[in-house]
Length: 237
Image 1 (cartoon, helix red, strand yellow):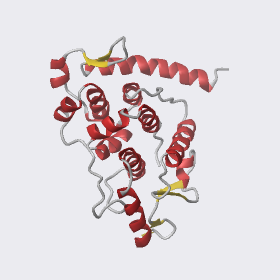
Image 2: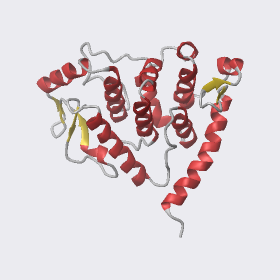
Image 3: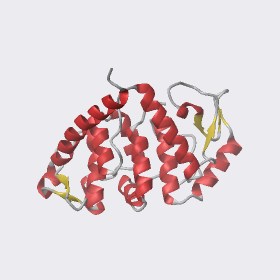
Image 4: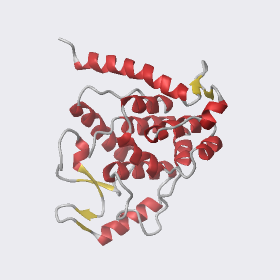
């Protein structure tokens, strides 16, 4: 009998090979010294990038030259990147993880992906002190602990905002460090899967470029890996 672990390993190996091909098609490779570099600047500057591959491309180019990345994929925000995650296939998700130095995601079952995603989401809330922005509620779904997580400031049983709680959430967000804000925006928009019109509005600094976010995360290697691990195992909400 073949174990799920064996299936996950086999799938990961297959996806890694195709993911590396995708990365090379973007004009990028990883040198023997573990440094990302351009294979061909002309390819990187002019190759066609399908919309679902934009997160991979911006992560790859930002790892080499943030200024080039910002010019190659202009006006692309962190929120844009997060919303694109649901469009990515297994190869693209694997390529994204590789670029960010994370372990390739596993794909054996929706339940297992949900378990990994939910545990990672709650670990991020705990490790980065994001309790002022997210709360535990009764489960609104299954196959993952993330179904017990919701943004603060909203009464989910009655589907209505809670003005004072929203005010407190926004105040807390404005006082956060850059990596904390990145994690909040990531979790919030993975939950919403659209632009926020309720929670972090009214002057909250949320228009962070994807390149700026990647640069801040790369300065904290573990933060980048954890963030990519979360995105790679997105299992719906």
